[in-house]
Length: 242
Image 1: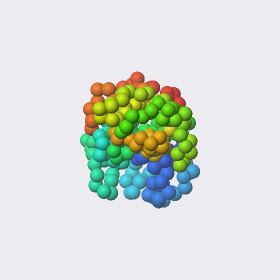
Image 2 (image 1 turned 90 degrees about the vertical axis):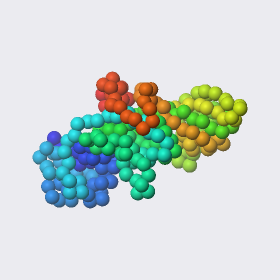
Image 3 (image 1 turned 45 degrees about the vertical axis):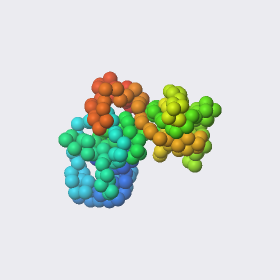
Image 4 (image 1 turned 120 degrees about the horizontal axis):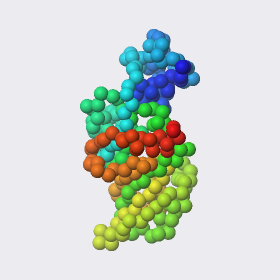
């Protein structure tokens, strides 16, 4: 069956479908020896020789990993500044995996790694509304009316945010800080940090603690584990694959 070239690359674990599109338009992909830059091009993977940067692609077993990203790690597979990346933690894997979405350099917590490009694309699409929960610590005592603004939605430079679920965990009057968790389904860049900036309480510490039904329970920083069959089934259900 013929499929779009970017889907074939994603299915082979080369990159997410969005990143595969960039690889194609950059002229890095050849089909039967000819460079293909058209994103709408369709081929039958089993009957074509497809290469990326001269290396033939091959089907890989699908891998789904839950990773606890530490602070000070870049959510990419390489970094021109030679900072520590997610790739440093999965070097022993025979398959090539990539992160689903991003956590910024100073944010720690739950990150999904996979070579399933279709699942990655659907999980990142805002229409599927996969919830992501973050534990937030900010300096100062945040009044409830400020937290209510997050619950209603705030106006950022890229538009209004969707209503968020916010649960106050504690006020630490001695250390003058507030701890709360916030659940959103959008995937804007640095969204939680920008939302907190908007209400006047910049983030001190930020950790993603949940994505869909996945949690960090039992996982230590810098470690990863495969998803269980039940976890994968729930994730695919959230992405509307099954």
